[in-house]
Amino acid sequence: MIQHKHLDDPQTREVIVIGGGIAGLSAAIYLGRAQRDTLVIDSGHSMAKREPVVENYLGFPKGVSGEDLLKHGRKQAERHEVEFVEDEVQEIAAKKGSFIVVGQERSYRARRLLLATGIFHLPPKIPGVKECLGHSMFFCKDCDGYRVRGKRIAICGANDEAVDYALGMLHYSPCVVVATNAEKPRWSRKHAKLLKEYEIPVHREKITGVDHRKCQVRGLRLKGATEVKIDCIFTTRGDIFHTKLAKSLGAELDRDGQIEVDHCMRTSVPRLYAAGCVTPANCQMIIAAGQGAAAAQVINRDLFEESIANHSLRRFREVQLEQEKTVPEKRRKTRRR
Ligand SMILES: Cc1cc2nc3c(=O)[nH]c(=O)nc-3n(C[C@H](O)[C@H](O)[C@H](O)COP(=O)(O)OP(=O)(O)OC[C@H]3O[C@@H](n4cnc5c(N)ncnc54)[C@H](O)[C@@H]3O)c2cc1C
Image 1: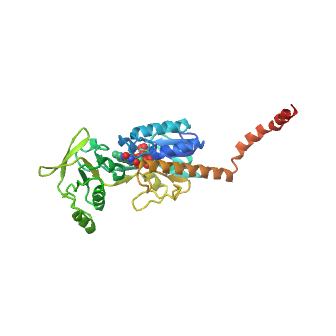
Image 2: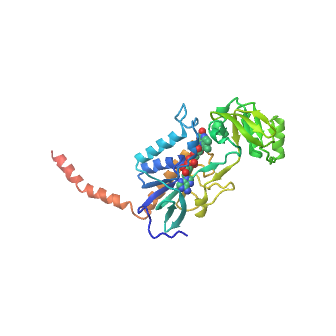
Image 3: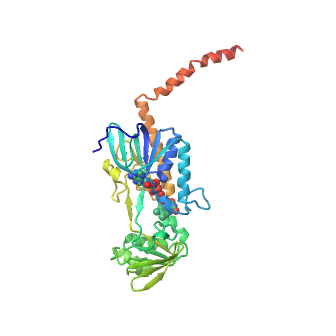
């Protein structure tokens, strides 16, 4: 139960976006341009930072680094007066039509909340592979299959998904192996048959290390002193969804643990929205950006409808009426001339 006598941020924001990754930034740009008082709270661990060259984002024929996309996205949002704070949200409570958001550093309040907290891809349990992340160790065949065309590919995993990955990779290269890292295979009979049908070698030994130079994988070292020559690794250990906050507010999650949203990115909790990889989206940057934009548009529309319902658009109208008092007079003068 959140007990807060005062808020560190005295404003009740129209919108708080939690997460300043790709989805959060795209939403922030739209909300800023819709002139909504918007605050982005970000702990700074966007997955996009791990991709040195994004090749599948619209508008960059030579690719763009994930860091650059984030940097430019933030600048673009700041141009439209969106505010940013570096903080990690710990708790949220819904109270009288608004949300109280408690970060490690400060507390905040907003009328609408967008969760764009992303996920974390679990790296394989292989010593020494971290340096190769995004260079020759990948998580996603849709992002990276193309860049490993014709190369020797190892899929690390022991479940149906690992087999599906191996089969999918045959589209890009004839040279695909599965390495279980001494885990007992949990794939179905159907998947075992497919491995046989497509003659995909399966290495069942413990992986003791990775031979790599300048972030490029060259081989998998297996227990028993064998080494399998490979050029890249894909892993299927699964994801951790950052949904703790959504759960605490009672938002519905799907079977995989992703936040359920409707086609407009509304969650099952009123005034709470979600976008990006934390939802059942296909986890791609361009999709996260699209979802962020869609969420921002519906938030803007919902706020607009709320202000119609509670007659608060009137304050703008009053300014206009005040100015219009002088308009007929001016027009009359012009006609006389
Ligand atoms: C190695 C690697 C390579 C990839 N390559 C590609 C590629 O080539 N092309 C492609 O399309 N996609 C790629 N992806 C996927 C891409 O990074 C994601 O699709 C994208 O970043 C998702 O955006 P998002 O906004 O949902 O999450 P993120 O960009 O991960 O942003 C989530 C943000 O929320 C913040 N956050 C989380 N919890 C809190 C909290 N409690 N309080 C405050 N802030 C919080 C995090 O710090 C983070 O900044 C890659 C991913 C990885 C790991």
